[in-house]
Length: 447
Image (cartoon, rainbow, N blue to C red; front, side, top):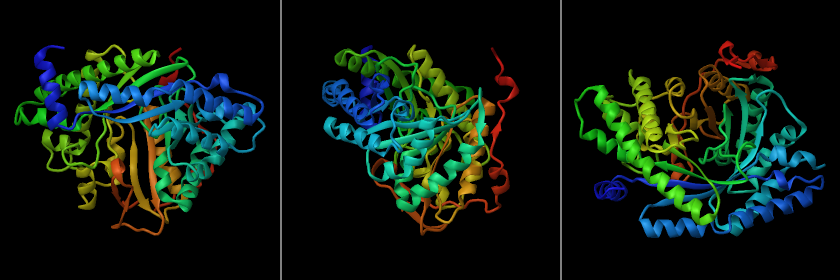
């Protein structure tokens, strides 16, 4: 890097909240499969604590040497529904507890991969894992879960969609905060370093380092320098900024991979906001020219932002992956929270925005008495957007038990505070109860 670029990066870190949001080590557990569940779990614990024994130490060293904040150290693993299926265990809560025990030993922040991939149907391990999710998330604090219910190639598994609506309700009945550890996907990606949706795909190397980098404040500051200029200039400014940010992520990823003696996987350049002021995706959209996020033009501005971020990232690094783009989690974005609270942003507008952003309806609190089939309908809508548009979409909603529209629920830390949003009360029950599978779209046949 040239001296000028280094100086710019230092400014980004000190003034504009640029950080490495996560260094995530992906670890394959395929060689831990055993017909004896206890033996499988011991193998899992041993492999995790051996493979990632230096992850936290190396991340701390890099942070100290380069002055780049590294917020989280995480692990993603092979979907547990696959790993545990060979055992005779009737539920998989003990596997989640093993994952939790390993993270405590290692000192990592989160572990993802309590996952099932059911876009085309269930195998026995999928059924057991999904049934285990509410209790697994209740007895752990660092385990994250995900279920993929649809893909462009397979269509949408409506039986799974219906079930996941009930699962979300079951989790909320125990503790609504646990819902933030579950995400329901269409077109889930295998190298995503961000939680709650991270898992280590079966096509990945045995071990790999993926880096997730974020910097909404950096993009907003850059756009402040081009006020009133044409949209082409806005796009070019975002692209150049994303290039610089991705370079930093690639540097950290390469250094971490070398020191940990594992391959470098990808940089996920995702503008992931936090509740801190000046660290907001919504403020970027307003800097582009919207009076408020949610105003007409919001979807177009977000599409511009997402595309420019991806272009800048791909120019900077040959291994860009994960989700890479802009996240719109309501509870984690200070300006999003204000817009929702003031009635300027609703779920229907957020759904439209998910057609062009990186993920979907994310960290949204809804009334606690919302029926399971309504949640399933929201999942189906998001899955349809992902399947038809050949992109990743997801739902992470929190039924706030005992709370109604106008109140809020506090998650603490990076997860923020979510105002309870109104949900359309017309029922999709008959649609959801049909079950079956929505076929894959015609444009999926590209073999």
